[in-house]
Length: 292
Image (cartoon, rainbow, N blue to C red; front, side, top):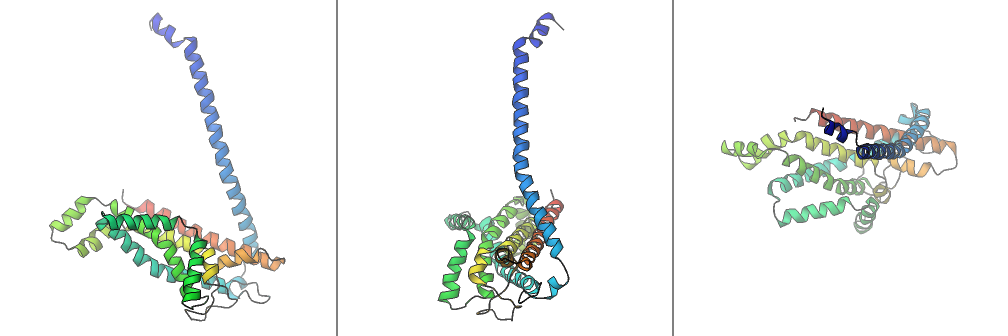
């Protein structure tokens, strides 16, 4: 090594610059770790409190008895959450996926831009606003009362924009060469869509559906205005018949003064957390198995 190169390497200014970079890098990593701790520790605290108290309240009666009277059960709330979610998904999936197909394949116009804008606005609207809207329309104007129909339609309206936008993004990932090849072989629009494009984008569509499912399970505010509450199982009526659901138990029973109600609230929170966790694991597995 030449003397001039050695002088450049060992120049005092270079050492000061390296020291400054080291200090800045250390401070940056420290700030990142502090920010990570501020996110993780409260989350672990919440999960830990819910898991410990929820598991302590888990027993067979929880799944076989209702919440009425002195029963320590959530059978009616579990059933209500299940049927609300099922009917909401039955309404939302065809509409949301269909809207996503339109936006991806035919939405390069003003109509498509308008639909995207409205979907983005709806996803940013607080769910309690949607619940109040549904209360005015379905409960009061239509005279349905607190009911499964009002609750399912409200949840469907809430999750349709998510399904539409995620489906659109998933379909846009399908190469145009696949479309061109299918059309070149004489395929019609319906054949190309249902036998080529949708199967290729199935993992993205399934992911969007699972995320919408997680949203529907965890909602509370819209259901307060539409489903009401019942201490008994669903009686099969779609209107003028309140329905129980797990998130109501969490929201209401934790504010009661007795330990019986607190146990039900923690058990309901634990069950909801497990359901959402299972759905998110399903999303991860779906994404991992998707073709690269």
